[in-house]
Image 1 (cartoon, rainbow, N blue to C red):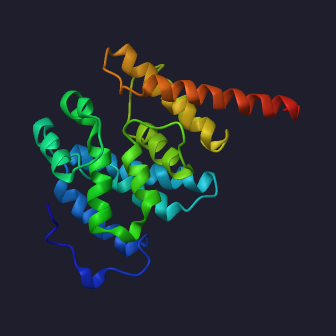
Image 2: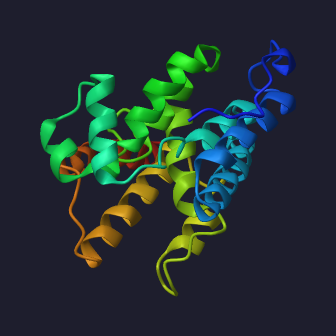
Image 3: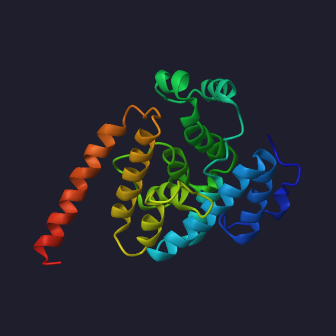
Length: 222
């Protein structure tokens, strides 16, 4: 799935510049449904906003947000075949039973081959946006949270999304991610959706980290 509009001659040395962003946006529009493309633009804008709030590289965050669903253009069986063809180190259970989680890791692998200039931190953020992790980098946290709170998301009144959106810049970034992870966890349970096998382990680790942050705050008298 390549973009007929992609022009290598127009590609610039700064991988995250506006011109390159527009080229990747053109490619993405050809790959995704209109709904998914609109969502990706929302995640890109929200990633930029969160990065700015925490003093991070906003252009890099915008690109990572734009590309997070790069591979969400196949049905379940096609995703299984795609993941196997890439020979990724993914639990066979995930491939067989939860193929909707594969598009993060496969997108990261494909983009790493096609656009290595974006760098491993961008690819990791893309790979981790589906399930999260206990040791998330700042960019990982930005993309994961942006995917949840971009303006097009609406889980209904009282879902907690608006409260989470209001926390951007008001709480530490790792705390923001923890709250996003909790909201996702709760939403999946409420909707009787299956959980990524490592979810409970990740949640326990995040709870421990949260307790450490609270203890530090208490020690400082905050």
